[in-house]
Amino acid sequence: MNVSGWVWAATLVVLTAVLLADLLIIGRRPHEPSIRESSLWVAFYVGLALLFGVGLWLTSGAGTAGEFYTGWLTEYSLSVDNLFVFVIIMGRFAVPRQYQQKVLLIGIVLALVMRGGFIAAGAALISQFSWVFYIFGAFLIYTAINFFRQGEPDEDEFQENLLIRWSRRALPLSKDFDGAKLTTTQHGRRLFTPMLIVMIAIGTTDLIFALDSIPAIFGITQEPYLVFTANVFALMGLRQLYFLLGGLLDRLVYLNIGLAVVLGFIGVKLVLEALADNNLPFINGGEPIGWAPHIPIWLSLVVILGTLAVATVASLVKSSRDRRRELTGARH
Image (cartoon, rainbow, N blue to C red; front, side, top):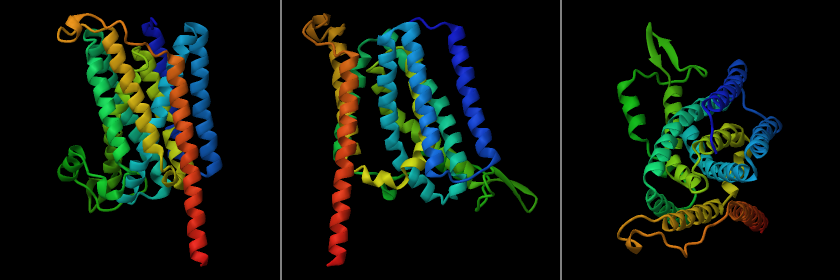
């Protein structure tokens, strides 16, 4: 796929305009969105992603569209895991519900900017060193094992990162929120509000999650344009998904297992591709390994969709059974 500079520029302009319009809507009327409003926004952003994929299909072929859809679905599913931590952060800083939309949107914009740097670095590494797939693959398999072992994040597991701790110490902060403002004036002195710290926490926490999601999407496509746009579309709908899922998050008890399977599958796929293009002298004498199978994009899409569907259905079934048992026990 050969993406010209003007296509990059047009894409960035359109996506920036959508995000700015979203921010203006929130800034004009801060509120906690209803289930209906959240559903409509999620449908809007999902529809945009689907239309974008259709455009890729018409201009660059089914293979390119398939890579985008698979990458977008992978990033979107991994982003759902971010929501658990977002809930913890909002609770830890006691952010009023009506201002959480603005916090999430600005935090996500910060995350997009930082992810752009990750994507550029990853693309540069891959173009120069094909053996980096061994590292990406091993890291994803390691992450998948950790996902299997860990449960849902809880408040005790959330640790403020270095940037958050530095911001608390170095910046003049007020104790209380002042609406959705980042600064306030107290006794004639300009202070930052806790809202700034929350936005930093959201943005940097998402960046930490990108350590596994960025290698994962490079296991599906090595085209920087597709990697970037898949990340943008996945994160753009994350704010509304936060309010739509709400209490449903604690019912997705098998989500980590499903994500572990997805990451493990992509990790193995990366290692196989690295073997097929091998040039490391201590592996097979520096020659490619011919028996390493190539996993087609359609199979990747089927595996990812099937895994997430099974994990979601199994989670909801188990949660429903557990609630029925609790109700039965309460009656007796």
